[in-house]
Length: 585
Image (cartoon, rainbow, N blue to C red; front, side):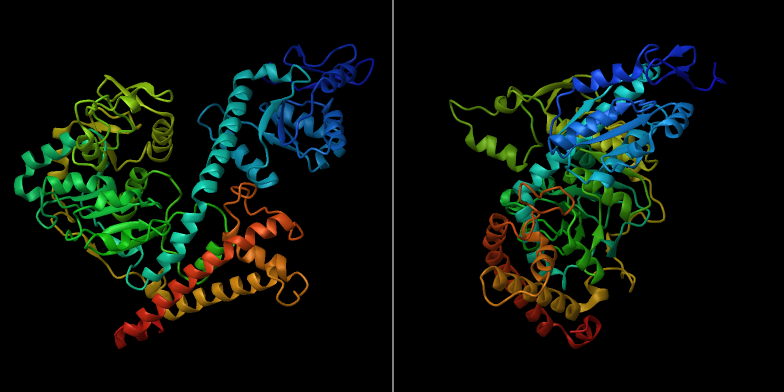
């Protein structure tokens, strides 16, 4: 039957379709049957209607009519998994359907893992925008979907998950978008003395990336046993150590100095990770949106990278000015970002440990971590060290570790584990250490095998972690100069001040000036609940409520920009003449 082509057969009203020995539409009155099914659909606003195998498109005009009647912001996604039926539908469907901007047609090919579902998700976002839809509803107006029910069901699930991720990211942006951008504006003042992470190189040394999960204790003990005192000194050991910020106290307690710490946290919570470490000269790689105090807490030098947490014109201006440091895709987890950094900065093997995404009743983080020390401090006759609140809360769930025994996790940790596997599974240079953490989709080494692999000296072994001169054309403060940075921040301040004057009624606005400034200063409203995660969509400049909300944001941002500008000018004055010439100050 593989050589059979779909046939259109005349029925009482409309046509039926015969294919692969099956009649896919009613042989009596296919048009009326589809219209009745469409009439039974209760139209909902901001809904993506998924129509698997639309064939001749019967019933879709009625759905589009109901969307228009109710003034809903909904759309129809037609998909076809059969190549011949796809060609047949495109030839036979009413051209007016295919021209309607509320409907699009996509080919669904391959099974799970083919990437077709992700491609269709991207297509939906590109055509209708991010966070456009709130729900998925499936339209089945014929029997064509029965030819590939698993494929269509899988696509529906992928679309639903993608939609949920988009809304979840938007809720995160609503909560944290304001501190993200405020931190980024403050951190601009550190760029003259904090180069891009791209200025670092790991060479070909093996790298151990450490999280702060419960398995870290055994790994650190193994390092001390296997390498002795050499494990403590970056210049003596034949491998490099990258760790998340929460793991710093754990390493400090054992005298093991990492080559680089990675920090993402935008709030004050991660300052606990640096208590007692002010004299420890450990370099820190921090996100541009991380808490500014992070850059001044450790005694070592700070290096910036950037994870664009949403779409903003502000980021495009930063990039055009050459001020964007090394860019990583947003991963949400400092452990995932540390692994991405290790792979980016070096060419040797990367071994992960302590990135568990799981916990037990008596072990949530490694010993000496801030959370563990807090449990010890609070221990008394009525409160023990067991973390029963985390282990037995409603969202907690059971899981099986790499070692095969039961552990606890939660939806957030499980989500990061799944993201880890999607991002890094199949990476040839990446291994994980066997232990009580969740499987990460990587090849697993025993602790002994991992230590032996780290001990192998190669062309990069034995060298201390070093800063190499960045290429002159690479983005970063060394290429763009302090003068460029000062002009950039001054421009931001001037535009923000002009927007404040317009919203305060000080002088008339030129035609289109208000909308231009609102789009220019999009960091003022990108975290609003109705704007977060929408790809830059915002209410009209005639929306008074929206304008009042924007106005309340301006003064705090102006204060931050003015403070940043003052620090940049001070850095320019204090720069040596040779550096001033390089920086254009």
